[in-house]
Length: 353
Length: 278
Image (cartoon, rainbow over all chains, first blue to last red; front, top):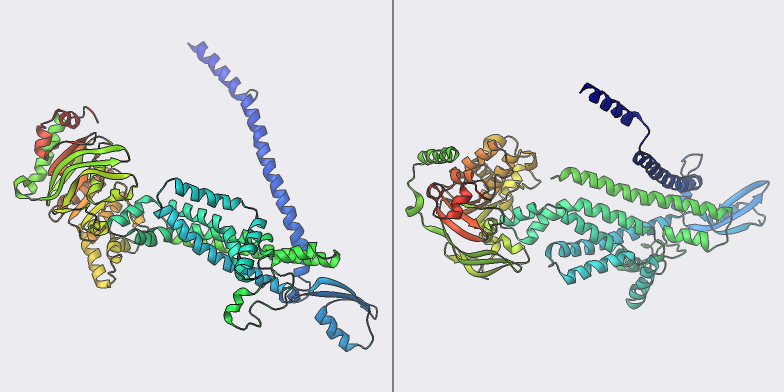
């Protein structure tokens, strides 16, 4: 009996300390594959971000007080004048150049670069306005239809068809939305290139995200809460209002806002519907009636990046503009996403089950 | 069968403390179910149910899983309306003489009169206070004094007041399982129903919490008509005045609980009660 025990303990030792099994080796290889894939993705992201932050940072920040290039953030895009005067190199935007010319007598020969001076303030304003409006429209339409789909509609063929078409909507390329928006809102409705046309076009683009996120958030609410409310004599709508929507809201808002932030980066849907390459006036300036505001076209960051990188001759001065704009744009989009995440954390704390 | 005797003894003791005479003759019928057939889609869930549920008594529905006892319970306050494929084949359910499936009946009003407590305790993720007054708030009652009174009365009624009176602002979800279930009962009491339906209210509770809820059921029957679905035969024996045994969607036998457990008329009932199947 003892010999058997001894030999079995020996083989046990061999098994435990011996060569790694085949399964174990495969496990190692696979594990490293996963790890390397992750590192590769991280590396790509890091390269993109470092590049934009480094080059864009040079445009947005400066070494002297106030350390932020206020001109870049607060001016409209202008022509840049580059010239030498009394042995000094000057790079001045159009307005500054005119002021400078007043102070001296002689005529100056300059090299001019379109769009490379001034700043991007109108683009920031335009993008923020577009995001806000699109979010409002998309949330209203999206949440209302999600309530219908998840709480009221009868399951069946029609509902499946509706869901399928909403999913398909998510797969439509953005340029198609752009063309649709132009045909529908700009031309057929006669809204011209305007904020409101851009809002609806962008809103339709995010609708699939908003609807599916809202539906999912509502379906995640335990059925028991609805039952309890109904059993106390509440109507369906009261139940939804008091026991479904409040608890689903954090999920709905976060997903929707992130969706909108993503769509805000699209150039195609706004290039035919809302964006101008250059517009000096902000949308609220020079209006006859307050409602004319909705029908003003705006400049927007993604379209501006497209214009300065594809529509004008390239040189070192335009490249500064491109990176600076990209930097600000990334910053805004990240800010929106961050705000929505903070909001979710706050709301989640309030409602737990 | 020593266990059985023990159970019955227990039951007699409980009855002894409750001075009332056998409820059979005294109490009038409050819920009357006649020739009731019920379907989920094409599948028939209930077959030709006929029963009377007496006022201010505890009626227990027992039977193996899938026998239709919960389905019938949910027919009494029309919670089955929420299931798309559910439909009534034949017959009616009358509460206090009114056919509750009459198209003119507003199910939300019915549910105020016929409260329900669920298998899984489901307090709202709100404060204890707000949980209790929810049913009042949705009726538009917002007067502080009325709500305060209701909270105290209902929590006392549900034997929970002593335990939570100093922390009404904390979340209902911070309570233990048994407390949560009693909170759900308090919440149901707040709308002042005549009938309380309980769908396996103790199935997720430990024995101590179960005992408390059972005690509560006992005290509630002075004011409410209670219908309780339970998997647990001892529980049926302990808390109910009358017991209905269901099998395969049919009502096999309904009788005073004592009689049912002591000398069931039907073979199937006997087999189930003595634990030979189910």
